[in-house]
Each structure stands twice: as structure tokens, then as C-alpha cells.
Amino acid sequence: MRFRNLVATAVIAAALAGCTNETLDSVNLSSVKNKTEYQLSGKMVGKMKELGMQKTSPILLRIFKEEGTLEVWKANASSRFQLLKSYKICAWSGKLGPKVKEGDRQAPEGFYPLYPHQMNPNSNYYLAINTGFPNTYDKANGRSGTHLMIHGACSSSGCYSMTDEQIIEIFALARDAFKGGQENVQLQAFPFRMTAENMARHRDNPNIEFWRMLKVGYDQFEVTKRPPQVNVCERKYVFNQESDGSFNPAGQCPAMSTPPALQVAMANFDKDYQRDYQKALRKYDGMVWYEPSEAERKAIVAEQRKGRELAYAPTGTSLDAGKLMKVSDLEKRLTAQKEAEEAKQAALIQKEALEKATRDGKAVPVPQQSPIERPVQQAALQTAPARKSFWNLFSKSEPEAQASAPVNAAPAEPSAAQAAAQQPAPGQQQTAAPAEADPQVATAPAAGSETAPAEQPPKKRPFWKIWGN
Image 1 (tube, rainbow, N blue to C red):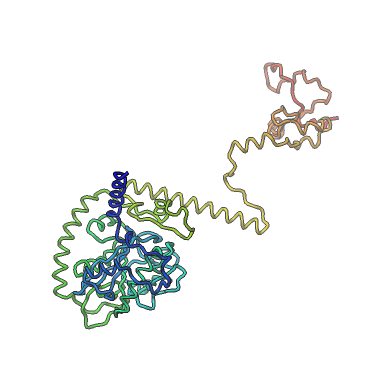
Image 2 (image 1 turned 30 degrees about the horizontal axis):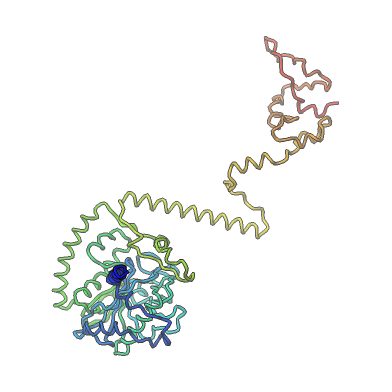
């Protein structure tokens, strides 16, 4: 028994050793009386002291969509920012790439200042911080959208959604920073960590030029560990630029320059980056990254929804759902997806047309292809009662009971096609046989025939006999 307990203790210790700080320091919401006044845990405050941070010192938020991560960085005594805590984003909608218009389900990418008035303690999603989208850059480029948040509830339609336990802690960190005098918290939202390898992997993405622009700010933070100063001119971001002129978002950039110390530091950084980028290009030669859809990301975390409310909708990460592929294989996959989408749209249009025709009382158009499977159609024909032929309407000698004969029985009257085949050509004399003629008697040979015709089998009553007697 004692040995078993020791083994169990060792297993638990190993599991705890592999846990993230977030798991060990999870908030117990049942004990929270006022969510806006929640005080950070003793472990969190202790970690701040170890890193030389004040409780009210400035913070910075960084988001990396592809891996589904939100990081909180905090300033130390030398005003350089260090990573304080990393959170797993529970849900973000859309794909990699910036938000462009209302309703596109994309989550914003770029640099966003978060002010105290953007904190929403009364959110329907527990707590929320408005990203401020569209920012100056977005407006200059005609991008639109509203209510793009970082919030709780783990459900997203263009937002970055956390769990309630996560958002209450992030909210408290921002609140304390504002109390310490921070004017705004910088949110840096990126598609992925802009390393040389990741940039090479996504080199064929249509958003690559936009991402290269964001990378300048990303790199400068990596080097300085201070939030870059952000301006917009000529409809593009510019970072840490000194100028005597003003920055017009849609107008021409003023004369500007990079501080000498930053210029030297960035030159060394760029040299190493270019070396690593060329190495990554060789690694990914002939390969391309398949960026998964939101549905594909959701599929890999479907098990997480079981037993929870419907509103709980984690979306998984692009790294888990995407993959590297050969260029030819990706082209085939994208073509198949396009054809499937076109077929889906065509079916939807047809359905709407049928519903509209039914509502308006019009004749319902017949689809080009019947939805009933062929075996079902054949079975229906075999069980349906036989209809009385057109010729039977004039037949006096045809018994009425023959109209209900089985379908597979020999018909008493020839079909319309057979009757038409028996009619003489135009101009040819037509001779009606008497109604009492013996069916065993052979007919006379056709004009011009040199041999007598062979004995004919009993003939059915021709259609012209309907006028007999």
C-alpha cells in the first residue's frame, strides 16, 4: 500500500511539473464576489516581485492567432517588458489575416491602443476589453467592423474569446496598470510569431505584404523590449520614426528617420534574419502551408464541447489543423473545395427558387435531376395502376376491365409509337380490312414484290379498326 501511494505521488508530481503556470494558478470563480474588483493571486504578485515588476507597472498584450496564444508582458524596474503570463485563447473566428469588413468573421490583426473607457465590466460575455477596431490604419484603408473584443465565454464571431477564468485575470492586470498611470495598453495582434521560418512557411499567403509591414514593429519590440511608437501615413504603419512634421494617415509621410541606436540594433538583427530566412526557403522548397478553415479547427477540438453549454465553442489552433503540402496537392485540394462550394450554392439557389414558387402559388419547376433514386422510381412504376390508353377511348370491342391490367401483361392495344409505325406514308393508299377478317389469312404482297410473303403471326387489332363496323 505504501509503495502504491509513493507511485501515485510521483505520477501527480510529474503531471504538475508539466503543467503551465496558467493551470496551477487557475481562478476559482465561485469565490469571486465582485469580478471587477478581483485581486490577483499571491502567486501572481510573487512572480511580479521576482521579475522586478510593480503591481501597477505598465503592461502590453500580444496575440498570436496561429498557435492561439495571448501573452501579457509587464514592465520591470528598467522599463523593459518581460513576459509575465501566457494564456491559451479559447476561441477566435475566421482564418489568418486581418479583418476587412463587417461580418467577415475575421479577428483583427495590427497594433491597437486600449484605453480605460474600452474596459467593459457589464459585458454579456462576463468581462470584455474593446480592441478599438477599426484603428487609424484600418480607417485609412476603408476597413469596417464593430464590437471586436477580448472577452470571456469562449465564443467568437470576430473576437478573441477567453475563458471567464482567464479574462478576469487579464482584466485585473489592465485595471491595475491603468491605476498606476498607464495611458493606454498596446495590443499587438499577429497571425503568428514572425520568425524567419514562419515567414518563409507563409510566403505564398495573399496577406504576406501586410504581414511584412507588421513585422517591422514586431522586430523592433523583439530587440528593444519596449512597445514601439506607432504612426500611420500613406495608409501604412510606421514604427519609431522621428519627424518634425505631422503624420497624415491617408497623406504623404513627412520627412522621418530612425533613431541611430535603434538603426544599428536593427541592422544586426536583420542580418541574422536574412540568413535564417534563406535557410528556411531551402527547407520549404516545393512545399506550401495549407491554412485550415475555422470549421477544420473546430473539428479537432470537438470533444471539448461535450457536456458544456452550446455557447462554449473552442476553435482549436491552425498549427494543429493545418499542414505542409506539395504545391500540386494543395491545388487539387483547393479545386475540390471550390467545386464543393459551387455545388452547395447551386443547391441552395434551387431550393430557394422552389420555395418561392410554392409561396407564390406558381407551378413548381422540375429539377433537372430527380432526387429520387432510380431503383425507387422503378419500384413506383411497377406498383402504379396502368392507365387507359388514348386509343381505348374510341374502342367499342375493348373490354373496360383491360384498363386495370398489370403493367407487365401484354397490352391489348398497340402503343402510340407502334400505331404510328403502322400508318402508311403520306400519299400511300390505305385499305382497311373488314372487321370479320380471319387473322390467320396472309395479306397480299406489296406492290413490286416478286415473292410471296412468309406466313405472318397472328396480328393484333390495328388502331384504324376503332372505326370498324
